[in-house]
Structure formats: C-alpha cells, structure tokens
Image 1 (cartoon, rainbow, N blue to C red):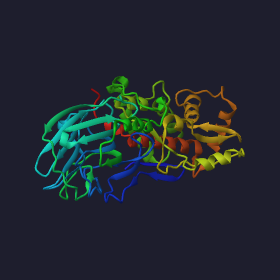
Image 2: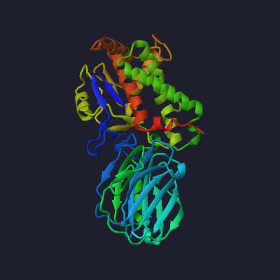
Image 3: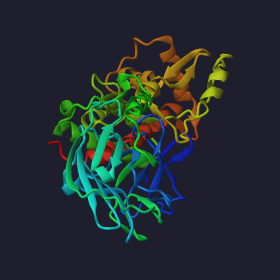
Image 4: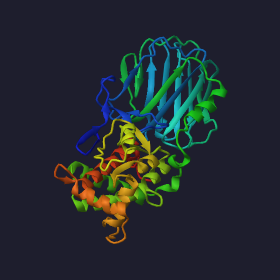
Length: 413
C-alpha cells in the first residue's frame, strides 16, 4: 500500500472494511470525472453487490468506470446461478486488450455472447445496453477523451436467452459469483457501477457524456500512442524508484531536495511533462492528491494578510487536476504573496541549483521564501526540505493512484 506524508501528517489509501477484504483500496484517483474509485489490488479483492430480485428479462443497462492494471483476460463482474440467469463482463477476452465481452445465459442454457472493441483508452466509462431476447448489444464510451460513436460489436452466440429469472445472490465486482463460489478476478480500479432494469433511450447518451466532462481540455488525456516510447517508460520507472527511496527515507537532505526539484519539473512542468506523456499514451485521467483539504479555511485566513502561515500538507481523499494542483499554495510569504507548488519547485530547480544556480537574479518573494523556508524548522528539518518531501510523495501517490505505474510495467510496443 502506498503512503504519503507531509509535515508530520501521515496520509494513506483508505482500505475497505465493507468489502471484507483489506486489498480493496478506496479513494483512489478518479477514472472519469472527479469522484474517487476503488482499487482491487490482488486476486482476493472483490466486492459483493446486492442485486437480489434484479432481472435481465426485457432488457437492461449498466454504467461502469474501470481501468485494468494488467493486459490479460479478467472478469470485471459477474453472477452465474445454477438453473438461473448469468451475467458476466470480461475485459480483454483471450488476452486481447481493447475487447470487452458481455455474456448472458438463461435457465435453459440459451446464450447471448458478444464482443465490443473499445477506442484504445485504458480509463473508460462504459454504457452498455442489452436486450437479450433480441440478441442486441449497444456499447458506447462516455469518457471525453474517446470518440462518441457506438463501439463495433461482434456477436459470438445468439440464442436469444428469454427464460431469465430474477437473481437470488449477490453480484461480484472483481470475479464472478457462481452459486456462492468466486471465480476469476479483476486487478485494477472501478467506480460508478449503476444497473438499470430497462434499456436507456438514445437521448440519454449525450447528457451522460456531457456530465462526464468535468475538466478543461488541457487536463484531459489526448490518447496519443506516440506520446511515450520505451526510453520514456524506463525513465518513468527509474524516477519512480528514486521517489520511493526518498519517501521511504522519511527526510530529504538539501542535495536530495535539489535533485527532487529536477525530477518534479520533468514530471510536471517540462515542455511535455512526463506524467502527461504517460496519461496521453495510455488514455488515463491524470490527477494529483489535494494536499489542502481545509481550503475554505485557508482562503479565509489569507483575506486578512497574515505575516506567516504554517501550511500543513495533508490528504483526506480528494484529487485535483494537474493544473489546479500546480496553482495551489505551497507557501505564504511577505504577508501577501502566495507561492504555488509550480513556483516553488521551479525556484528550487532554477535558482537553488536543482538544474541551474542563480544567486543574483532573484525576485523579492524568492529571497523571502528562501530565508523563511531555511529558517523555519519542522522538527529538526528545514521547511524547504519538508515541503519537497511532500511533493515527492504526492508524485509517487499520483503515479500509483492513477494506475500509470501498473501500466508502465509493460514495454511500449
């Protein structure tokens, strides 16, 4: 489990007790929109969802956000009842990433099985509408970084299942509930599962798509296969190992702070930041942990221009777009100047020797920040180093929480 801490405040993934399995991690970065999700972190992780009384007869629909951590066949959700109904959603059937399979069977063994080919993004919000008796499947992706057209569907079996009794057991999210026995699993993140006992009308698709757009275009992935090559992937993994070493050490020496500023610049502020390259390549929404959960209180304090704010960084489960995180306050100096995370890391990199040393050409706030951040002690550590450690852990947390680290384990084709 990842852990992020700053200014003496320990912050961690929330683990689920509702699912009865500590390997379900809650409050992960959003897949689409701004709501957090759950990560199924190992093969034993799953959730049991009450669908008793739900029927597939006459048609049904579902919505689901999901992003797999692996590129092999996985059972996203499912339920199979002896002498009853079956509903299974499979990601990457036959280990063919980009395909999604829906399987429906009735009490008499009649089946409707179909594959849909997605547009290539790993972060997906799927709307699926099925009329089993008619062997009809319609799938669309609602995430704003993928095309709006309906997905191509290939029907593999079309028996027109029509004897579909109500379910008597729970639906398993991650795996399939086969009369109380779990089979299969899903490694990755999932959220926003909604089941409907009817097929949604076509005029509901566009409102759902518009409601899925919560960020400006600059904070959305472009789904560009050429954004990342093998060299960039290896650089990301090397950087991640360095971040982990610094995080586990629990403190940064000044030389580490300077080195961390260069890495952070590469990930967040370069001409095409490395994190953006990965997000664009994989089609994954990039988010950063919100380190100011008491934002309203902070804003109220700043209105009266205090001469000093001891601003503690902590994470309570919320996430921010990259642009919002970079503009968030890291320091307050001179009674009126707000120093953002972007300005802070650029100052360390460009003025203090992280990538360039310039002791002469410094603005007044930079001089004040340098003096304050060096003189202010958190325990026995300079505030400058404590703040950089908070940024180090935020970067590591984003790489893991957005699923980028899991996907980067695979070589770029």
